[in-house]
Image (cartoon, rainbow, N blue to C red; front, side, top):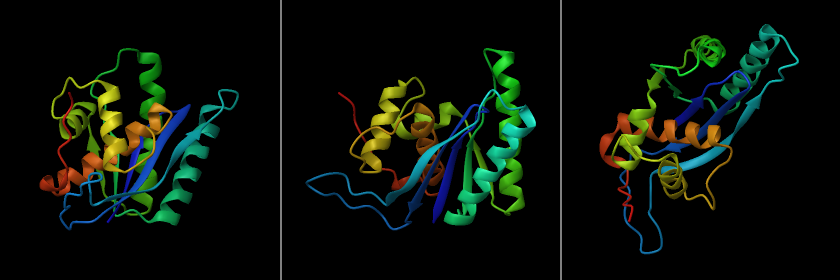
Length: 177
């Protein structure tokens, strides 16, 4: 199953596409053997020099290209319940609306996931530091380093959380010292 995770933003939208196999993961002596594979990740950036409609159009067009290329079975999008700053809340909400539209146009089901749900699923508790979640993403996807920028790591974490919510017992347990 192909899952696309999205961390919405008007200036920068992070995305990550993973494949997830429902077959159980075994344990290897070398590293954690997981049913996950990272296919691609990156950001869609828009310029503040462009108008909001132009920026949203670019976001829509880039997401459409990605969904056509990778054909995700589900799209997982970060869902924010509160914002510290109304100035950032509106553009993020606009970007999220475009993301939902892109998914609807391609008939891709959407799962909205909160940051708290991601932290609990990946790190085991809701007060996990961002760096802990990023390390779990690196381990689960067998990456050489933590994906950068943070928007990308968040998008991949959202995709992994989505897979875990679809089949709870497939996430490997990662312990922190």
